[in-house]
Image 1 (cartoon, rainbow, N blue to C red):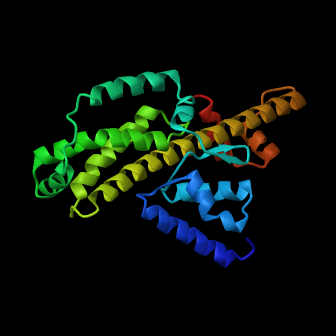
Image 2: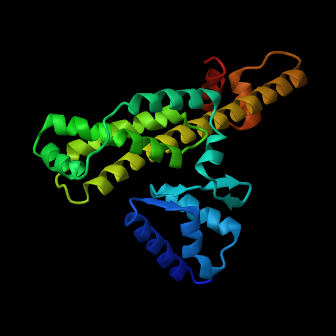
Image 3: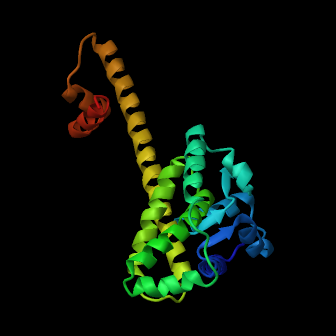
Length: 246
C-alpha cells in the first residue's frame, strides 16, 4: 500500500473493529481486513505488533522469523512449560467446582454489584475466572509465566468490577480491563528482560576491553584509564561493573 494516509486510515479502521469485538481479533480477521491491500508477511507482522501495542489481543499471532501463523489452542499449549501445564491443570480443577451460570443471572449481578452488593460482586468474580483463563491463553507470551498472566487478569477483573458504573456493555468493559492488565504485564516483563540482556552485553563488552587494556599495559588498570581508553564516563563504567556483582 503506497498511500500512507490511506494506510493510517486502515489502521484506525482495524482498531475500531477490535473495539467492537472486545479488543480481541484473530490473525485470520486481520488478514481478511487487509486482503485487498497486498501486504507482505513482514507488513502483516508489523500490523499485528501495532495492535498489540494498542492493547488488542491478536488471537493466534505467533512471530516466527518474518511469518505470521495462526495456531489452534492445542498447538499453542505445546509451548507451555511443564510448570505452566501443571499450574493450569490444578487451577482449572479448582474453578470447575464453581456453580454454573444460570440464564439471565449475570445481567442481574451487574446491577446488584453496581449498587454495592458484595455477594453479587463475589459471584461475578467466580463467573469470570474461566474467562480470564481464556484471555490469558489468547495473550500467552513465552516471556511471562502463564500463572502470572492469569493472576494479573484476576486483579484487573476485581478492579474493573469496582469501577463499573453501568450494566450496559459491562461485559465488554470488564474484558477490556482484563486484557489491558495482561498486556501491561507482558510489556513490563519483556522490557525488563530486554534491558537486562542489554546490560549483560555491556558488561561483557566492558570486561573484554578491560582485559585487553591489562594485556597491553601488563598491569591492573584504573577506572580513569578505562574511561579514557573507551571514551566512556566513569560513572557509567561503575554502574556496569556493579551489575556483575549483583
